[in-house]
Image 1: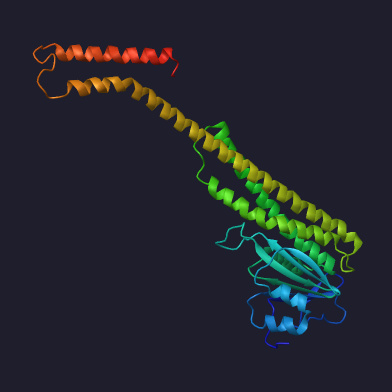
Image 2: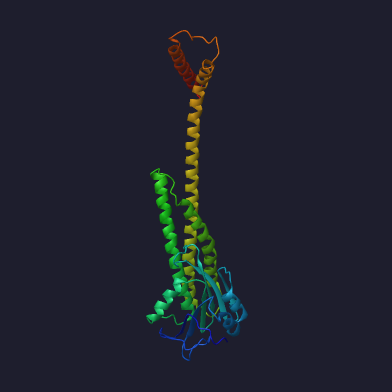
Length: 320
């Protein structure tokens, strides 16, 4: 073991829900404690060596992986769990979800983050209030519920924003909202992440392991169902935004077609008038009316009459 490895958080959790700071970085709780929770950052010095020395190879690879996808695997007497949470870090986009890797045994939970995961801040606060989860199943349940709570909040916010845009476009007939494209990109990114997360939570509720008591399977299944509902809501928002975008495109195409049509009618009316002005505008001898002071008025009247005639002809042939 690398002696200079110090996790971000390390607690020994006791059966009554109280916790004390772990006195060392060994993956074994103090005598009498239910389990030890160790939380660390992927970039922390000494983590890789500690994992290689103290954890099974599969757990080490999962915790240290540079890129992850939500999944659940069993290994001997432990579970490797990879999850994702809403990114609430400063300057980050919520849809760029953060990864969380877990190695769980009967008396040890190791969590590794790449960026701050606020669900684990919730767990730390609960421990500070002497409300620590005394079993691995309870800890997994609390972490996943906290992750899904934030996902539900974001999915509901997306629904509200989509509804506001629909009111703006469908009901009020206003111009397309400038944030439509940005919202569509957010929905696409979020959908890509929470779909696999929902599947991983469903697998977690079904996995056969003594670490998760039968009484907690319904609780985990409920969390998985909530995640699946959020996935459905995000899919619905994506479809609604696609329909809204199609409506806007059709509206703009219709407006362009109407404008082109009006311009075509105007051009058809003025085409013969332009021909006349071109002919009478030539500067050669022999042009009629050059000696008649009323010639310009006569030409203007003839052009007006011709314009009216062309207009009537277009109406008769139902060109507009």
